[in-house]
Amino acid sequence: MDQTYQLIVLLVALLALLGGGIWVGLSLMGVAYIAMALFSPRPIGEAMAINVWTASSGWTLTALPLFVWMGEILFRTKLSENLFKGLSPWMRPLPGRLLHVNILGCALFAAISGSSAATTATVG
Picture 1 (cartoon, rainbow, N blue to C red):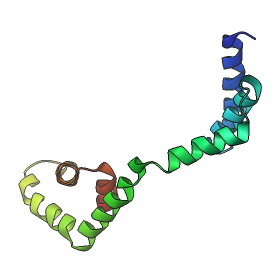
Picture 2: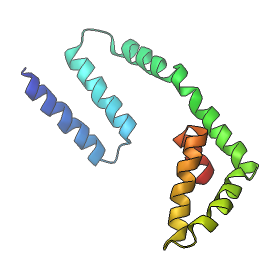
Picture 3: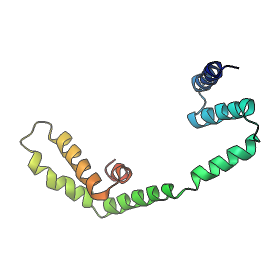
Picture 4: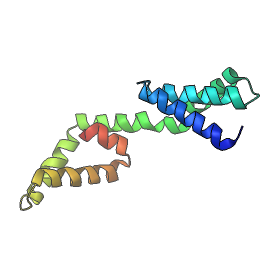
């Protein structure tokens, strides 16, 4: 089977699953299962279990809950509220003050915390 034909079959299967209302993760997993069943000699269950475990147990995922926790701490201590109250008088002469305060506040908060996830969890 030609590789272009294989790609078209897999893309059509993915679009059919997504168009049918199946969740994105389940659709991708289903298409990967079909591709491995058709084109790989390796046992499918073992390969998928190893890949899922490797992806979900990495150290890179450890930082995200800690950044969200930091954002929650900053929210509970009213630091983010005080940041917005402090920026509001500076933006008074500009039209659309709320928009400018939000943009500047989010930019400063992201620069201070170093995480867009913590900024999203704190500011909303």
